[in-house]
Amino acid sequence: MKTLIRPLLASLNQYGSYVYKEPDFRVDHLVIGAGVVGLAVANALARRWPEKSTYVIERHPQFGQETSSRNSEVIHAGLYYPADSLKTRFCLRGRELLYDRVQRGGIEAKKIGKLVVGGVNDAAYLQKLHMHCASLGEHGPPTRLLSGDEARELEPDLSRDIVHALHSPETGIVSVHDLMAQLANELSEMPGADEVPDAQIVYGTSVVRIDPHLPSTSASSKRGTDLSQEGWVAQLRTHDASHSETDALLARVVINATGLNAPRVLNTLLQARGVPSSEWVPMYFAKGSYASYRGPGTSHVRHLLYPTPQFGASPSTRQSHAVHSLGTHLTLDLDGHVRFGPDLTWLTPPTTMQGEDAVGYAHDFWETQLSPEPTDAWFDSMERAIQAYLPGVRRERLAADYAGIRPKLQGPESTTFQDFELVWHTSRGLGQQPVWQRTLPSEAPSAGVLLNMLGIESPGVTSALALGEYVVTQLAEGVWGPTNPRGKARAYVDDVGDASLAQWA
Image 1 (cartoon, rainbow, N blue to C red):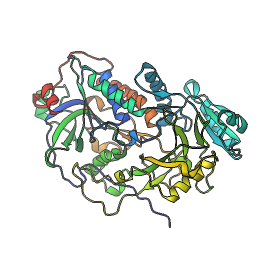
Image 2: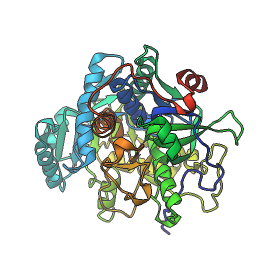
Image 3: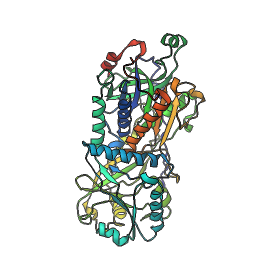
Image 4: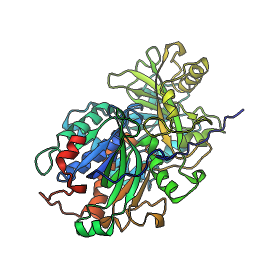
């Protein structure tokens, strides 16, 4: 019997545990989430506006503890996504920015290329992929169509059933930890206008509530037109504090880069409007497990190997599988070790999950799923998928390695492409704004700005630096203006000032 996959429908402060608080401090930029995307955005903001304050809030004790640290660590060339999609736009630009950053040093990476391999029925798919890449212009990834014999000249271990292949020389592998560490270190060392760091990461702290801040007439009059009272109030709970102790920050710009939990923030706005939970943004969770391998059948492998989404799949699952996953592929780590994955398993939240945990979130049920389930059925499934293109691989040499969870906005029944979703809102006139507002509203220069970054899965690592560049461009055009004034004093709520904010952090 097929298991029904239900989405999680959740928001911040869903059960009203936290009452509204007036803000104690003010920051210019508040980034929620210190994964690779959050760090890239914060780094870009602090670099572009060193005279403004940029704070990153991370609930874990270290950066990148969720999706960012549990993936294939592939630098994607940008082969698969529609030409007009955000995934293509940010993957192509992000790949260039990432390779440029690698060249500057401090990040271990290799441009090793990959082969997309297929059988007798996959010629049309690979030809279409090749033509698609050529159509993307000068920044599109170069590709080359190969016969099965030409592919085996590069990878002798490939099956004789491989009769068509596509070579992508721009694909690479990277230490995502190195990338995140470099972004985080640069952020903490970046001086502000007064030559002291004005960008920080605050670990062990969760955002448990967020509200638009609508200043009173008297406050606006007192402050004049400096907009220091405009923005979003983020209520924060430090994990070593009591459940009732929170701090409130007023942020002019809030970037929600929380990955698996990103829809919670947007759903908070819907909840405040009285929208029933059945109409909230759904949260689906796709588990991908990896197996390490040392043994026969891969001794000559030098490229990443991806089967076509159709190859080895039954006709009934091809379309859905191709939408949600690129299949169980072979990747290499930076030491040349082979691993296979990810496979695809959909998770469903328990029906009895209610209430909030100690940091204000409904329990993250997926945290119990961060390792493979090495059952006989799992090894059998891995073996079938791998031997379709590498017949020399032996099941007994496969070992369960790790698993990651991908944030999905659509469930397994969907057969349509899901792009990144970048959704903008302003603190003024929130009730009249559409939910899926994909451009920065015209009210942004005189109001607080909130960007929800939803469904940021693959190619999220490759796209991270380009997403940071995009955020800076949007804010420069629509909020802060094109100039970059130096030495302008920041106004904090109640004149708390820079020193008190640093003490809190």
